[in-house]
Length: 106
Image (cartoon, rainbow, N blue to C red; front, side):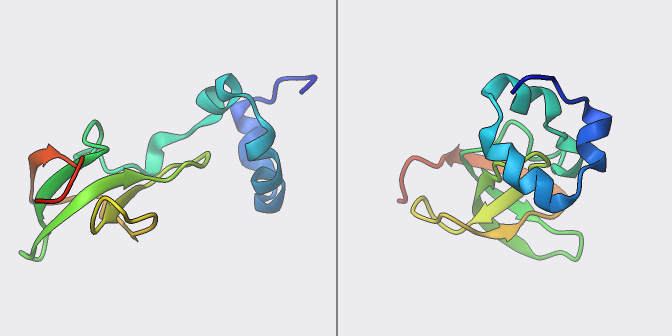
């Protein structure tokens, strides 16, 4: 890419333009433009871990923490280590307990 795009200019691009351009950017440019505003603060650093959470409405769930690979990443609730997609993680939980690295199911 010839010129560097600013974060403000990136946000003003139409979604289709961002979707087309994102895979063509260098890893350095991706790191500069990535916006972590949609990540769950309680799950940051637990990507690749199996966790147990208690949701705001009192439900208990266990899942592997994943993350999307786009310019505005979001955490994912993956059911097992073979999962490629999952539900978007909630922004806030009552409690998050790391159980183990999600290297294999037991």
